[in-house]
Image (cartoon, rainbow, N blue to C red; front, top):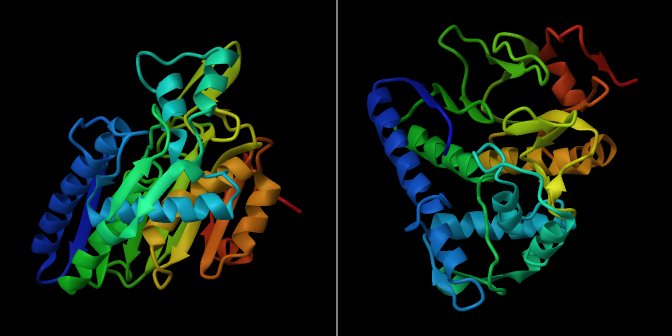
Length: 314
């Protein structure tokens, strides 16, 4: 998962719930990690252009949901962006700015329509050789959904599932009977205790994405890890960060919270807000590069302590 995980739970079976949750995370990581040569994702990528690969039902679910939202967003979300991620290698020793020709060649292998699904036996095939899927933008959210099921089975009514701040779920209220107050990171301040603001959540998933998570700066330009699958380059939509809150009653709340933050980042403030406003049970915030905050009314209602570096859109 490439992140620090924190699981909190209160109740008679809290210890069992947390231990089962951590075990489940390790299982998902082994299946979904492109760095693990034996993972389902690596097997799909290795067989690209040749054959279907039967995968774990959870991996199939992530891929099928991803393709569904690729269609809904006209390709703003596309897990076949793996070849682009590998080309830029941002966050690793090999990070660099590829040539226009390299990007153009890689883009020929990015197309969600080339993900072929066979639901009867949970098999997946990539239509072209050299294609590569990357579940980095949805796997943590899937893990959140899976841990929620474990918590429910152990009757946990108060807890916090934290997959490295980018994907979280608040179960019930805190031990003091109040909503969970979560600090949203200031996208341009390296101090971990300096926040954009505080969002109060309960029985809700929270997702956050930002251009500060993995990036490098060259000639004054920030090159970050959130790619626009349509250009093969880091998204230039005018967004620094964004957060979404999804009610626990919404199916796949964890996965959607993970995925939607990337979608909104790529769409930009105007189209991103249009996308958010069309979703039931989903609220959100977008931080523009000019320090303007765009919020849905439901998000604004539970947001406090806004940092003075920012201002609300009029």
